[in-house]
Amino acid sequence: MFRLEDLTLFVRAAALNSFSEAAREAGLPPAQVSSAIKRLEKALTIRLFARSTRSLRLTVEGESWLPYATQMLETMHAGLQKIQTPDDDVRGTLQIAVPSDLGRHLLLSVFRDFRRQHPALRLRLLFSDQIADVFKDPVDIAFRYGANGDASYIALPVAPDNRRVLVASPEWLRQHGEPRSLSELTQHNALTFMLRGKLHDRWTLLKDGEIHEVNVSGAIMSDDAEVIRRLAIAGEGIAYKSWLDVSDDVNAGRLQPILTQYQGESVPLNMICPHRQQLSPAVRLLYDAVKARCASVQASFAAQSRCN
Image (cartoon, rainbow, N blue to C red; front, top):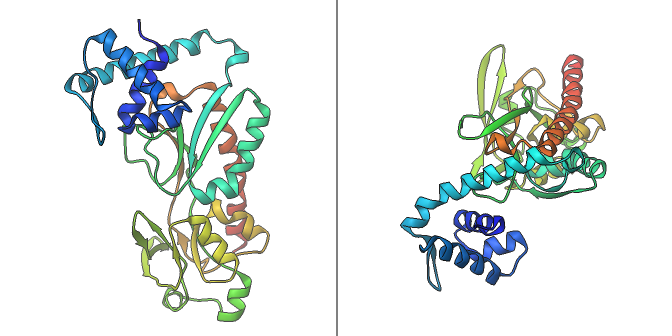
């Protein structure tokens, strides 16, 4: 008979290619993961991993058995959800990956309120601009900007109408003047974002159905979107940011939209999870809470657009 914990550790060790990483993720000593794998290998009378002091990889038999182990885990979790009482619905640990600025600036308060409403639930929050792999990384769900072009996972729309906006601080605009055209925009210091080594220095805007691409440059760039927002507030230049990230700053007067005759590019926000079985009561309730918060922010964007 297989232990649920042993199956879980096998699947995670296979995804992470490391016993020590699987142990760290589960909060266990590495020796406990090794013992779990040995119990499985003894029960199956096969070797699941080929291991040495420097490497770890699945054997041919391990690769063949991995999808069945994964399916067994999914079936057991589905069965547990069926027999849990309503009081047990929102408990356990929920691991969430969120873009840096969105998480720290907008969603952290949502997560805090949600945790207070459900004291039996633990949240593990991973704030990073690196795109989480919901199949391999230790996450249950991820909030991700951009259109969903991958049918291998489930994507639920959170803020489908979200767009980027050009913003700068009032102090920057007093010192350098407000650009009135895209050609003038190129003369200003742009705060540019990097992701996976790629510099996003070509900004796309729309006007009257026509697409305009502008090559910008600046003295400061960062791979952390929150840093870009803070630099803009500090008066270091012009940023091209998601409205969800800067709405509070605009409403508070810390940032000011510019070139509002142009429409920023679409950056819809979705909630991503690997399988429909991941849509537990906790996930569905959190999705509703995040969607409601984003809807209120989108309403302020519509009001801002009407004023302009």
